[in-house]
View 1 (cartoon, rainbow, N blue to C red):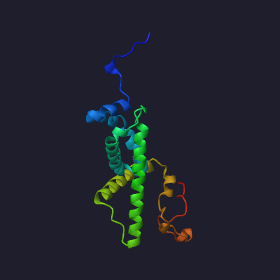
View 2: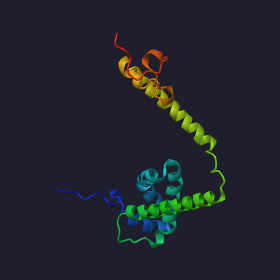
View 3: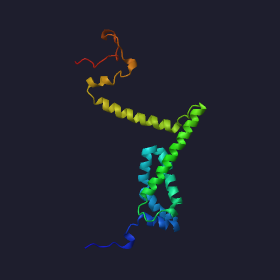
View 4: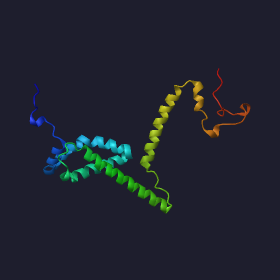
Length: 175
């Protein structure tokens, strides 16, 4: 025998929450809470995390402003929100394209990378360097030669008798 849960325990579908939010705007937070992470992941995969924050905020602002025109026959707001986000992504890409074309016409250099982005990049690279160094120490010494002198400027075409250290063309001799 199945038991019907009490009315207050039944979770309202998105259409009902949006309908209630017309009279009580704070109700829209329920839709936000349900979908903000999904929409953020969707946008971040397309534009990056930094741009995703702005686009997701604009997505929910647009949804909130247009909630009176929501089709209440649709129980889930997810497709509606994805549609809004997709349109905003396309708008963002078009704006960026226009900016880059205008920049190319001026002949000016593109704006420099922000200091915050440069610092984040360096910190991430340092963390990656430590991870890579740890992985390299785990390699047998005969395999490390592939990373030693991998730069073409350090490679030599001179006969082996005239090559300096780090300019070898192959692995070190076995001992």
